Image (tube, rainbow, N blue to C red; front, side):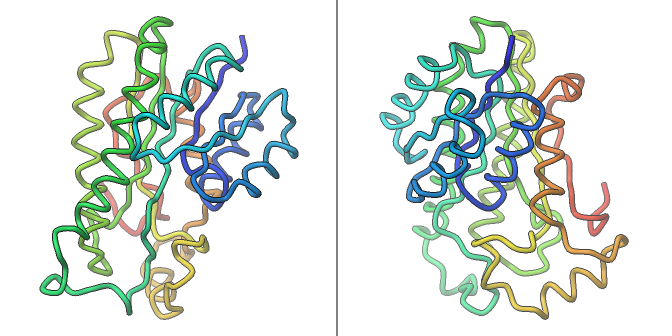
Length: 250
């Protein structure tokens, strides 16, 4: 039976690479988007509307997420893998980033809502279907900045660190239902819309200090996500796998 993956924020950047990786291994793909319908529709046309569907939902809005889940299940019958990739309102801009003393709690709350609340809504929405099938694979996108904050992106990194604890608690509870829960923490990616404001100096510093002497690409991370979200990754749960060319080592 063909399996189905739901990728939030799947219309562009890392999300689009993840969609393509799962499509290559034969999965049906549900491409969630919030603003970029044209890009999501383009991916569907490339993959084929028998194997892909583009669905709009703000992951922070539970009603929209539930409607997306309903439509995805209606088309494909199951959602076997969820990838929490959506990034709401953040740019990796070391110049524009506020110092801690300038930040307001609302800045933190915005990232907690996009990262943690978004994952909460999506996972809870699909969970009944996964439990029914006694099968599921959940992969959320973290960051290596929680371990090595080369730039102090306070609110973003804090939300992503919380995502690891959230995921490990889920791994403990959901394992009895055959559901795995993992995190893939990429390095700063070259280049996505979110990292387009990153200065050349930051990319150069990362490259020079990385054992592989390269900046991580969206494809590097997408390949690990597809591994953890498909059959080869079934033996792993509760893990935070870092993909950054060895810049950070566990």
